[in-house]
Image (cartoon, rainbow, N blue to C red; front, side, top):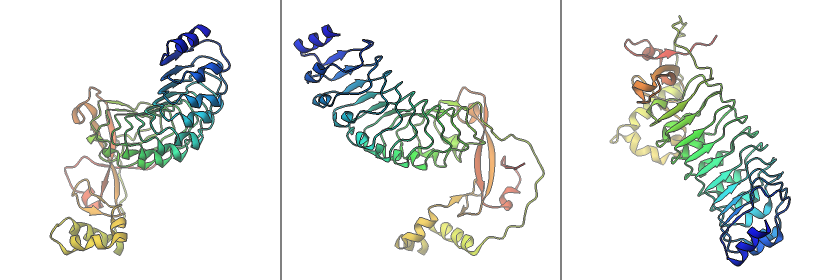
Length: 343
């Protein structure tokens, strides 16, 4: 170890490798190597970092994987040049908000195999983050502020305790790979179609019953979804109640229909009523007649062949959610939508 430090000191090196040296503390002399850009301290028994490390203002990569850290050291929040930070296989339970706020140039963050229960909203400060991996932790939720990280290309949340994902996740439009296998997800939020670059999705080992609306329009190349609770294509008789739409729903459908006509008075005047515009933003359209509706709809499912419809090698058929505006549409002939039965 001493030889490595001396070599870096006299050679004014920019990289120092102290991997697997059985050290419990970072040598004090390391903080004097102010030209360092890469510092590898993985596979040791380090439980804390000295404050003097803040002198390493050129440090771009720091590997502290497989050590004895119980928390993320505060000094890391002062290393503003860090681009890659590896903290896998420690005993970390908390991600301090103040540390997140100081890592604005971070591109890669690896927190795998720890005991983290939540990520702070301050994670939104990592605006340049491209790779986030929190595999095998104890996460029960993901902050909606993750949606601020629009440069994210890969997220790995495999083997946690997540029962839902925030809608804001779909603002990460640069996302190409999303791994959320072995969680407790019962559904994926609507709007997944916004992830127009998503190529790999792993949702295996969850509790999904179907995929969101327009899921089949994604440009996926790989989909892993075994071990879920998908609905089956089993014809059953149904009891259909007479539909009586509320006045609010009838007016909303009329306004939404008129808003589609660029020359209509409704279309021209709607921008002057922001509250109404916000209300109507939650509307959708019928998968069959394409007519708009606000809140009254019939949940259905259609079965998509990954090979035929999504041009994937996988021959699997998956259920994809679809919304119909009324039983009138549902009862028309020639469509392939099934009503969802509850038993």
